[in-house]
Image 1 (cartoon, rainbow, N blue to C red):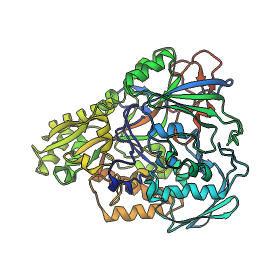
Image 2: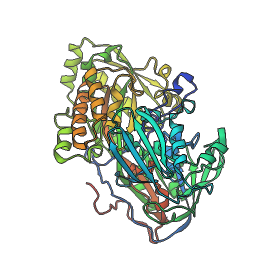
Image 3: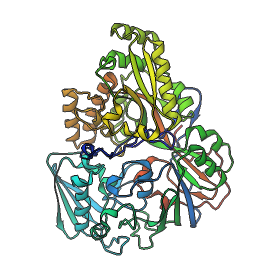
Length: 573
């Protein structure tokens, strides 16, 4: 759950910790990501269109090294704090989890060769044998118990602690077997075992590193790359781990080294991609789509992002406490205009808080019903004015936070201001520095005096509940304190339901409730953007790169550049 405008976004990033000790125990953000982040595919409703690609061409051979642009330097690579794009983009290639997310956003075995559910409250993970850590040790059940236990230790203020709230115990039940006992059935827990929540590291390695774990030395994990030189403020290197067990591919990484360059300025990052200083990158600044696409130096790809751009409501004590005012703002918003200007035309206007891809596992009937009856995305200014008048909110002042963190943030704030002025509301913009903007996600004090702010959210699992659970009473990202007992009960029911279609039907009800009550106002779906120059290919186009060892698939292209508009077979129009 993280966020950021095109790339440098940190806007809705899921910043797990702040200096406030009181927040430490709450840094249990789910594996989601609230962030001002990336796009998704389709037509944006403005005439512009883009296509989602299933993947990039397979490499023709190995490559000595490649360089990757990232918009920020991770404060740490401790897997318990891997809550945002920069950390996970790097860590996914070094540390592996019990289960694995695939480039197609499906679940498959990871370090656990098998996961079984003998009863609703029990998950048994049978581990692969002979898996080596980067420190030379061999993985055992003790390492798994230790690694998962770090997520539940209050002293760690783990970003993933919330995903372990229903865990009663984690025990070694064999040399290569771990059994997790739940307090009650939890359909989400086994899915999160494919994220950083399920990472396994060497107990001895982590213990030896002590307080320095994640910031220097090695990470004692099992992935296809191991941590190399880290030049603070500049770059970080990953070196191929030749003792890698092979994963699903059964082969070593195709690159001998990956160099991540920290380029916080969007223009600098774009120029690095154009000059060849960086070979590729995810989270491309939306304002750079056109330059990169027509550059001739590489290809701009789009893939599933599981991301939605929203207007986060942070204060329901004033005018926004009346649902009619929230509905009026939603009706007056020019979503298509925002997609065109704020997302570079790469996105889809939506009235749903969840992406369509999040429902992919459901039956056709379930997928259809999940979006049936949702409000239209088209504007209806007259109806919006009537709602404001009916609520007695004419002339009321509301404050929206904005920031230079990215054009998706600043332009959405401007769009809200324009919509409000048309329907009788006074919308004031409060400019917030990028770092302070990130604090809006974690610090209630930072939200004082602010009624709304642009918020991009990405799912860490392919389940709509990942986002919809944020509106239950007391949830970490329930900024305005929205509360509805019936909604809470449905969240509990969905969480405890393992049958997929039955769970998704419940989640469909939650989606319709959220669309009516608008604890957040949905604006657009946003795909993952990826740029690769002519040297390299093989990186997945989807948001799977957050938890899948994507860099191991990158190798030499062996051919001249593909056309900037090329899409792979199976691409969605």
